[in-house]
Structure formats: structure tokens, C-alpha cells
Figure 1: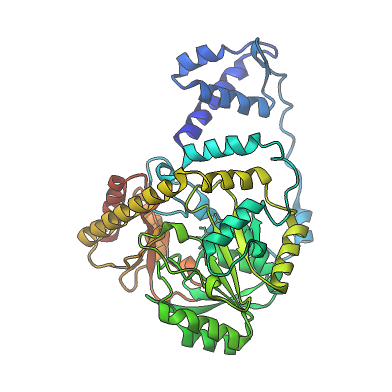
Figure 2: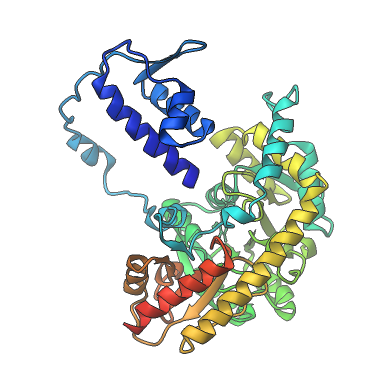
Length: 463
Ligand SMILES: Cc1ncc(COP(=O)(O)O)c(C=O)c1O
């Protein structure tokens, strides 16, 4: 982030300088820019790259960078009113998802977001893996369209049970897998059962596909099978979306006694279970094996993402399914996007096969334990009136606010006070059972930041 903002600051300064230069005038040398702006050579080269992409400069290797011709004055804004008429009343609501992906502004502590803090991401190992992957002679060729074989084998082994590589389809991240799976399984207008609360990104993608999310309440042991059976009966749904391990946002792990019950209820309804296994590698204590590993009849469509344990830019995940549903999902992906970028697949394969991978996972889990405990201790000290879960993995705490609190207004006030947290409201498919905040311990830059973030939040709640 810091790096990106220094590139932007330098690019702005150079844009101002370019306004004073005539076309063809030479910009100061890279070395002079490094000294004058006190930035690194990488920042200078990225800022110059940006200006070249904008057409403001021309770079000539060995001679330097020169002001390009003056850009044409901006044209009058076009009248695009006709588009609103042509597009009609269908729209895609991306507000929740874009909130999740927007970085915290400078000076604001990020206790929200879906990914590990940059300090916990294996950035160097990824750079090494990417360099090795890109050097493979076939890195840019069309791969097996179901995914690079070594990676499919790795996902199958990680899922366990009788899962075989032939049942694995590599996708471009978990969100894309959700989109492909939901569109392949369900026609527009169909109901989709989902735990309540649930990951707001699945609600967004379901609604964009014309589906109707139907809430099924859970408790500390995960979804309640009796209510799941009722929801199937009342809605006629053919699919249930769930996260049995470290549910986002509640952190719940589906209890041992409920695992077979959930599969039985789905069997009685003739329905699929879509298992979003998004945080398997973020277990402070190890999660139970995925439902897919105990599924003997092709009922579970399993989605395994690795962005949570690595970095958000590594858009690679896997769908595990068998039978006609696997064929339908594979065909939907092929028609919709051919296949995920091969160099990224190869990069992930390099990463998970490297000796540093288990070490990385161990250190992430240890850091998550320390951060979770620090956040809980700070909350108990500063905000004893909140009821907060104690998750055994994942990235988030789920805090029950006092009755009558407006969680959306509270999250907005918290942002103004310098701490980013998520209001609970958007995580509910329908009415919220009570006001909540999702407080992410895995996204803060450090333990000290976490504690300071909780202190700022307490200040807002007190006022
Ligand atoms: C429960 C859950 N599933 C899926 C995703 C999608 O993640 P990705 O597309 O990075 O794999 C997220 C991201 O926040 C998530 O929280």
C-alpha cells in the first residue's frame, strides 16, 4: 500500500512538472528523480511506467524519458442516457463486495477485509514461485482445461477421503468458483438456502444470478439441521450453501454430530450441498475434514480457495465434484472463461510444493492465535458489554452488540474515528437476528494495531 501511494505521489509531481515542459523536453534522469524525491529506483520506474501508459511521456532506452505531445483537450461528456433505457431495471449490487476489497484509508486501522494482513502473506515465496513458474517453457500454453494436473492432485490430496484428481476443476479464485457453481446448478429465480448470517459475497453473487437466498439460522455448532429440513420443505430448494469450517462471519465449525445430519437432510430433499472451504489452512486448531471427504454419493460440491492462506492477488481455487454436476460446472467454466491463467496455476503449484509452504502455514496459524487472543483480551477490557465468539480459526470475530445499536451507523462512526470494521447487517440473507460487528483480527498490520483499533472502537461505542 505504502509503495503504491509513493508511486502515486511521485506520478502526480511529475504530471505537474510535465505541464511546464514542451513536447520533446527531457525529464530529469532516474537517478536525479530518486535523489530529488527521496524515493527508491523501483518507485521511479513504476511512476515513469504509469506516465508512459497514460501517453504523457515517451521513454527511450539509454536516453531517458521525454514529454510527449500535449493531450487533446477533454471532449464534452457524451449523453449516455439511452443506455439506462436499453439496460432496463436489472442491476448488479456490488456495494458489499467492493467494501470488502477497498483498502483502509491511510491512518485507518483495518479490522475488516477478507485477507491476511500483508505482513502475514508469503510475498517473497510467491515472488520466487512466480519467477520459476514463468520460466517453464509451456507456462503460456493452453493447459489441461480442468487445470494443471499437479495442482489438481494437490487439491485432491488436501481434501482427503476418496477424492481423486479427476474430480478437481481449477478455477480463478473462490468467488469465481461460487459464481460458476451457482449459475451451473440453479436457474434464475430458484431459491438458495444459506446459513444466516453468511458470507456477503455469496449473497451478492446469488442475487446477481437471479437467485433468492433463503436464510437458515445456525448457532455455535453451525447450521441447525432441523431448521435446514424445514427450509428445504418450505422453499423446495435444490441447493444449500454452507461453510462448515470457520464460518464467515461467525467462526462456527459444524459440530461432529451435525455433519452427517446435514448430508441426510440434503439427501431427503434431493439437493446439493455447496461446501465453501475457504479457510481450511487458517485453523488455530485443525478443522475436521471437509464434508466432501465423507460424501459417497456426489452430493457435495466443494470449493477450496487458497487466497486466504496466501494473498488476494493469487486468483486460484478448486471445485471438487463428481458425476453430471461436475460435468455441468466444467462446461460452464469452459464456455464462460476457457480456463484460469496458467502462470498463476503454475505459481500456486510451485508454492505449495516448496519446502517453505508448511513453514508458512505454521507461522500464519501461530500469528492468528496471538492476534485472536490479543483482540479478545482488548475487547474484554475495553468493551465487556459485547458478546464475542472465540473462533478456532479463520480471520474474524463476530461481536453481538447491545440491543438497539445501529450496526451500520456504528461502523461508519468507527471509520471516522480511524478503525475499519464491518457492520453485521449485510451478512444476513434477510432480517438480522440482532445487531453485530465483524471484527477481523487477521487483517490488522500488527497486534499493537489491533489493540489500538479496539480502543478506538470502544471510544465510538462509549460516545
Ligand atoms: C467465505 C468466503 N468464501 C469465498 C471467498 C472468496 O475468496 P477468493 O475469491 O479470494 O477465493 C471469501 C472472501 O472473502 C469468503 O470469505
